[in-house]
View (tube, rainbow over the protein chains, first blue to last red):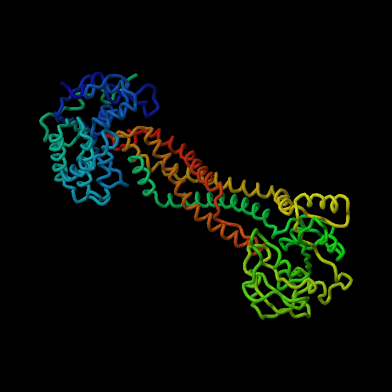
Length: 228
Length: 400
């Protein structure tokens, strides 16, 4: 049984140079992910990986195609419905962490829960302790190292007990040592929480850690070709 | 709870902007409340100030001038009335009390008023309240003695036993000093009436002061009248104002003062308009403060949306933030209001002797904060709309 099932997913934008027609960024005929599965997508910068993740998360709406996540067809939901599904089902880890700078570590994690099942302070603290930041609960992101900030992002992504964690170049801003540590932490915590993981990266060192690695270029027919 | 956290954090993140904007709301709200409260308080207080009398009889002229001169000790006297006119009204069956006053001199800007001791012994300036001496005694007979109102005594630095020489005219001119020397025999307790600003001497003292016209030695400037019944006032009004043409009977005193406020109502409206404009400009400040910071907030908004916050949650958070700025501002506005009204009250007391109650309950303290907060909330709609439309994907950079 697939947790995530994608069929004929297409997303295009108006050509930036003003030329007639639209530039197709994502054109994925089929993709699926099982519950608890951990898959890495290999792709170069600008290949549409982030757009693909945004489509899965419901942040963007596709032009055509369907995304079924946890038995719910994302593309058939209203925007508010997609927001709710995202809040309840998906955890998102960004390359630049995207922590809210005006909030403490604990508040960042609590906000990761707030729009889904509701804030659970005990769980937020437990998650931060799990990622080794039990002593930094009330620190602000600017008071943490980049590695520590990424760990807060991991805790926040797992805060709402997601079924799927999307990780977009999660080690891109870390050095090799911290990158490996962060990746191990992401994979371990996802396993512990029973969440599937879909990670995109162009870093071969990262990709080498995964058993399931797919080439996004092979998956995505769009490439850079223009569609009319 | 989440909304409150988002709003609180946002206010703190933009602390300088928050403080400046809230202060502008405080100034506007405080000004609006102060203008309104001073207006209503002053009107009510002036209309109620009659120092225990129903009417004033004086020379033919403006009723308002007569009341301002005889009751509030402002303005020049419209002229004198003869002793016979005073005797007539004193003996009129409809009149309970008639107290003559004579003016024409000052002591370093404070008006000297000649009157009878009965003003202090017989008249209640407010229900159950008579003028009382804080120290000393009343003058005796027509001696060159004086009793000083509390405010005048404080400002002039006079104490019982001190002496002074009056100055001629109602405006202080040091070159026009009378030769007579008066002894201060008593200081009045504060009555919070215009009497506090007066130097009181015997009626004959003013009438016979050297340099005054000896032909008017028996004249008085006005007669303060307490009637036996309100109906008598209308018949005397008919007799003096409509059938006669020598004298003016100002009755009732409150109505005459209300007429004054009616005449200067345009000024009230201008002040209120300015206060309203300041309020609108301040609400505009809320719009500008939040709107200008929206570019910096877009990343945070995008992150919140990526975490599952709905558009309407973001919209609500921005409106709530504008509302919170209004609430913060209006809390501070009460301090601004207190300062403005206390200063205005002190000025009114110093200039007129009338005491307004700055912190008395006033409807404006309800509707002005509610109105300002609503205005701020409405001001939040525009930046909230901008926040509502934030493109999430575009602000979650970088894109790979």
